[in-house]
Image 1 (tube, rainbow, N blue to C red):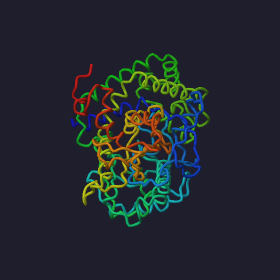
Image 2: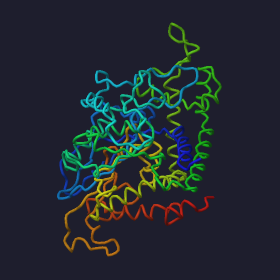
Image 3: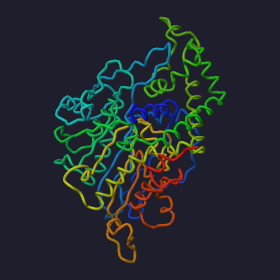
Length: 499
């Protein structure tokens, strides 16, 4: 069994037990370009946990107006590159609830059906020309569009497509129109695109790019496949990571089995449907219930108890059942942070992607770009899953944002600041003068969280510099992030004994 396959089998378990909603994030409107600070801090009390309200956040309805802080900077700063990780958009469930009908959702795209987007009709017609693009061979057989009148397992829905058309269009306004990061005659070397081998991630990435690029041109597009959901490329071999994951899964199991209200709810749901409790639990019912909730569909009823008339009283699953499961997931999220096991797993799971991100930033910052490879990729897109993004957030110290919602986006911006006067900034001989004016921003779903990251919290407190130095991020990725596992490198951390 390959390492990548083993990783995917392990991480899919997290998918079934950690569908945790994102915490509500207050919308922030731009008040113009700030010369001192680009991430305003709102000092408000966190709202009390509400599993239903949080689930609305998780659904990420595309009809809501969005305000993001991508592309904002102090005066005289120049944007050099952007790297984006996205979670795929809304999808059909991966699991089905025994003795119930599957949600009635049409996955054939139509600009006449809601939700829609001004670009949807053009997107549909352009995807028919996908044979002109360049693909890793394994991706060539995947459909460019969702295409089943009754959605299949895990298939991207029209809602998911629209979510990423909107994401791409939003970042086009931020980076193309405002900063001219790519022009209409962009070169293939300026763009790096990678995805896992699932149709929902490929289609999400294509929808994003169609909304983002100043000109969508198949002949200039190359899409590469990542064989692991962790985007670990050639660095997937990490025994310690798998052991930390095993420990975290055992903690999750203990937490779930100790929750008496959750157990009573599963018993009641199983009785309603006429199945054994263990069978219902194994079917991971929250996955299908989330689909019903996000699409405004009634919760499922037992197909064996449904007549031509309305179902018998008590024959359907209810919002109360759903709320208990979601409450337990929120409780588990809090306990997960306190236990720290997931954070150890996350550091080792996220490092390969973060290391490639850091190396690409450093190459661009040094100005040592070459004619081939990724050296000149000023925009990079990775299209993955919740089990891709969740470790990244945890490794960066951003666990409090909650579990990634559908079509979540994590953005890394590289900025070149103005030349500083000698009195304002001293050169660091170890890092080199090239690094003095290089800065990084990290944004999640439009919110600037740079100064909440593990590598820039202290800088926020002790420096008047409006952006975080790139050197902080480079040091974090190459050494500091391994402090939590008592190691100084990825190789050492991966191959040491885990007690």
